Amino acid sequence: MEPSEDNPFLDRLASARLTARELDVARFYEDNLPGAALLNLEEICRAVGVSSATVGRFARKLGYPDFRAMSRSLRTGVREELSLPVERLRQMHDDAAPLPRSILEQRVDAAQEVLSGCSSAIDTEAFNRACALVSDTDRPLYLGAAATGRPLMQYFGLLLSYLRGGVTILDGTDHWAHALVGLEADAVVLAATFDRHPAPVEALLRLAGQRGATSILLTNRRTGPLVPLADILLTTPLATQEAMFRTRVATLIVLEAILDAVAAEHPEHLRAESVEEIFTLMRGYL
Image 1 (spheres, rainbow, N blue to C red):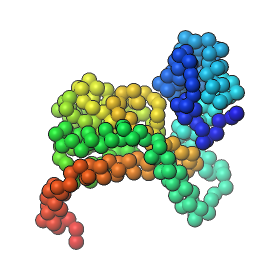
Image 2: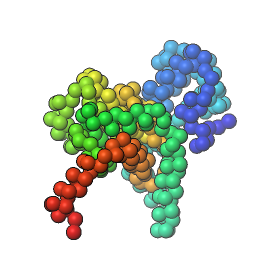
Image 3: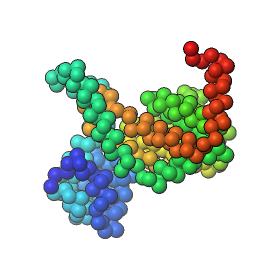
């Protein structure tokens, strides 16, 4: 049968019963997507060191008629998931323009689709471990993200400062080297990415590994070059979205859930009260 949006490649991979050699093929795809989607049968066999028959059995066990069907599905998915905003904008203009009201409805529907899959997409044990690390006031915490992820991380770090100290929000990437000089083995690094694999975040995760610090990666990509570098992986769902800008609502919800967990761990409110007192002293709000 042809794969559907309700049964994507990685979900099929997780539920398939595979032999040892087929598992080698599975690991190759897990470690090398999306680039592996563009490889032909001969290239896959050569990279993994298996026969074409093994790759064919692997594809059929995942529910595809053959390797060609699996490859076609993977390439379609890569084009959809990694399309650039400008490409999606061109597509929108090629299609009939929706009415203003339906634009809002489409955005809400897209957000609801992503949110409905959040609980099942994120591993409960990994989430609990991440919350415990972020809550640990004895461990310095570094927050890093690039591009659109940085304002979300700044928002998270600002609210987190109500609950604990020792938080370093990494500003522009040209300042990261100065802020990370004191990164030690007792530190926790929380990085967030969306769709892409920013080089500064890769460097941050590698540095954390070299220094012995514990790293957490919040991303909507279950595979790619950053995933193996993180000690704890929090993966939000992918959703089909034709709008120019994909929704970041899942990233925001996970960060806010971590805030809730930290607040539950620190019920004394002393730091939050001190922050509010200073706000009042500085006449922050009228």
